[in-house]
Image 1 (tube, rainbow, N blue to C red):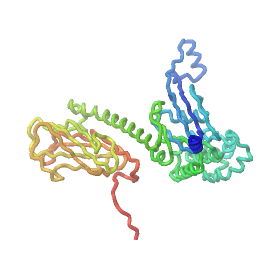
Image 2: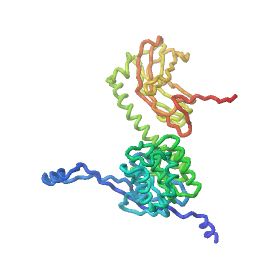
Image 3: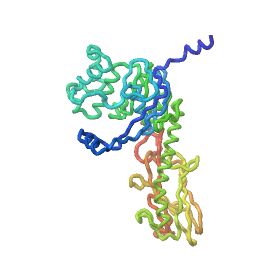
Image 4: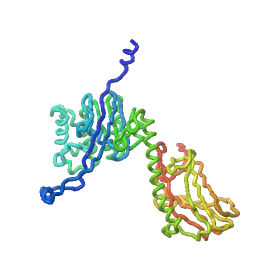
Length: 421
């Protein structure tokens, strides 16, 4: 009795993906014409291929009424699994079951014909989805009203802008009132107002108990609308479960890759500086004192990716070959060649009597006010007059700011209050 009671509340699956794998053959030699093929046969050259495993044994289920997200880097297999669910591609192994009417919104106007008018394409899409002309007649006005394209009903699609194309494609796809909606990253196309309109419509679908699979690079949007999530990497399932947990796994993986990229990017510059072979536009000075390393830290340890408002520590390691009296240490931060800030120990009235041998000095910002973006970092050691450089490393290192929660524009997050009088 107890088991039966629990099963009554268990929703059935709308989508079942079981052990799906997909492999593509990438030709090493491109042959387009008949002539190319004849020459290939005459010369005895055969096609050679490279096998690309787009998906490897992917398994997941989506309950009726659930919004399920799929995240991952480019090339991870997100669009491929969506196309297999939609029936556009056939899996090499495994199976897919979908319950109910499905509307795939995978690519911008997939199935549309550029030489047909907008109205003709709407009827064509309806026919593909199993709708008769009378049913599409009843939906026509609402489609063009939602797409805001009533004036352009009789315009051929080849004369549409990409934004108009997107609006018509989305409006047509949702008009058939599907039970299951597959949405790829294409919702990023179009202006802000249209994107907001699409997100509002998706939320309506959620409230009406529709099933949605949503693929996006926007973690904020995935977190907002998805109940559960799957992370793919190189065709493999890496993480699956509650959206917040999967996004955390994804951001950690992205963070690791970004750190490796930044470290590799600046390793060559550091090696060149150590060998005194660096470009003189990025490194100069008399070298009685040298900067031998620069690292960045937050509250959790060494990091090269920060969030706005987070603690930021830049640590400069130096080495001298003689005693340097009253040195001045300075740093500078740039974004897109814009000099954002350039504090030094003299301006900050930090007096250093001398340095001799090896040591470290930290520049600490309790709450970093910088907004999203990539930043270049300079460090230098000068004499007390700030005229003579012992070592100046210009934009040789860098870090990034990535935010999920801070919403602002520009370079700096300036705290303030709005007061309406």
